[in-house]
Length: 358
Image (tube, rainbow, N blue to C red; front, side, top):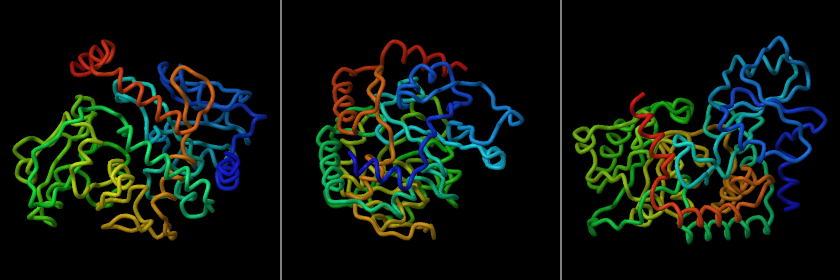
């Protein structure tokens, strides 16, 4: 724990506890749980809109990552204010954020955000610069083993279903993404759609058995990225929607992706990964990459990647409780919730129905 804090203090920018932190543009729903992620004694306030003419040197702001524009970032910098981008963590919840399911993990980044390959982020700096001792790497190994044994993924949706797959063909998983997400716009120089990805994978691997799994947010009707059945069937052998990601990963030989977090989840399970964009886990010598980032100069082991991504970078809390917890506690809580969440709640079902009619 002490080593973890020292690494964060050496590389990441801490909050100034003598000044309040202003959270900008957060919904009423998020305002209900966000204070749990901040240390006691830090004065928090929420505002709907940021008036730049009222910003002073030393002011501290937290804004959801996709709401931060280059112009806003520059304006805050010129006024001497500090900015942190907020985003969901990598093991988030049992259920989708689009269904208003509260997260157990978030990240706060003082330099950029992990999915934006056009600039550096705190996670990239950790991977480039952090010295990780044997105790931290042992903890990373234990975290990965527990994550696998509990069958944990980011959203923890879907069933533990076995597929009837060919024995004599290489099985490749292509995870779909939300095409309007900034992770594609800022993390993929060329491939921008799920159909383009499928076309490239089929072109590079003509003899493989290709499984396509649409993103759960797209399946749920909340986001853009659907590939129609006719187009998808021309480039894949099987589409799946109801199988959970951990169960699916246990049945494939490789993962090919633009920037999906599934690639990181595959690496944790020591499955080969091919990237067609620049996700945060690419460029460290662990993946086969179609593009490179000149900023990513270090070569990292799998346990170093896991330590930075799951231990050092995120903040974890238990739902409805104040105060940070270690990643192990969050994994156990997710496992407990998985056992209880066999079907969507009434709130989730009603929200999906309303969303589809908008």
